[in-house]
Amino acid sequence: MRYVYLGEIPAELGGGPGTGFSDEDILKGIEKISKHLEIRSLWEAILDSDDRRLSRQRRTEEIEKGRSQLEAWFSDNIVRHKVIIDMDKADEVKWDHDNGIFADVLLRADEPIDSPTDDTSSPSPDTQAATPTNNTDETNIPIGPASVSTHPPSSSTRKSTLYPTHRALLLRSEFFNAMFSSTFREALPSSHLHIISIDCSPAVLETVLKFLYTEKADFGIDIAVDVLFAADLLLIERLKQKAATVISTLGNGTMAPASDLEIVGAENVPQEEVINIYDVIRAGWMTRVPRLEEFGARYLASRLEYYIEEEDFSDLIKESAARIQKRQETDSIELLDDVRYYLSERFRLRFEEAGLEEMMKEAEEAHRG
View (cartoon, rainbow, N blue to C red):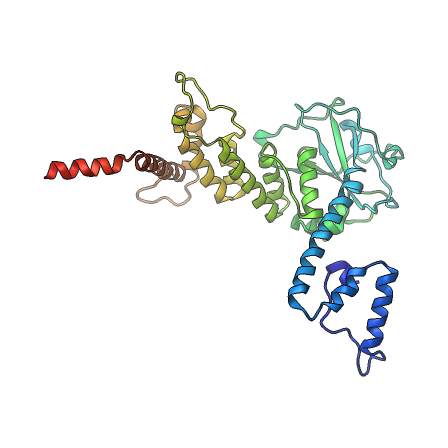
């Protein structure tokens, strides 16, 4: 069982004087059960346990194999059995504890108002068996700032997605760990699975669940900020850092300096902006991710010509100034300081590339001579 759950082989087999079994008896038993359960790697791992290099190599292979199996299981069970239903009927779904995938809690995500509905999705067998109930007081978990919420009151034209999940995997989130180990309603016995509604899109919730189940998170920059807020709320630090990396890495692809772009008049704007830099910087402040603050300042500095006259830019500077907690005799605005630093780097590098700095030094020396 230890090998099946953890992939580890104990240093001692547990046999010897006083146990009633010799090491040889235990080895024979392990060989027999490994063949019966078709766990060939168990017996091979025991044979290679004295070779540290082979043991490390085999453990790495087993971890990758386990992740691959979990990913396939997640797709075949969680994603495959998700329920897509009209939003005004989502709270009426009831799912029995006795179900084929052993799910013990349902997580709900509602479609954003500007997303097209998908009426072609076919319900799973569990969905067809669902019957209405008056269960309308389930938990709602908001994610992100209320000012940017895109989730208005329920509408029959919008869809909700319910994901059958397992508490044992959700416990990887400290938020759910606290919820299920407390006296909250979700931790109490019920006749049907509890529905926990999370205020994010189904794509974001599915990304979070995939990370909790498989430790993998493949998502685009279009939902990276929403994933960041979800990970911050659910206290999933590694996913939070992953989202910050996606934003700062993929966002770099649009950071060509303004002078490298074709400028036609003062009203020209950056081409193919894939992120809203103002939202990214605010997200960095709200989720306490310095990496995003630095990325935002570098992004603004790389194309300050476009943003400096915008009202949103002025508002962002004011917000940065308002974040100063301890007043000093001479205060500085953090965002302005960072932008000024990256501006100096930007033009210093340009001077070096053009050889202007050496020319200026030569001119100065000639003037002195």
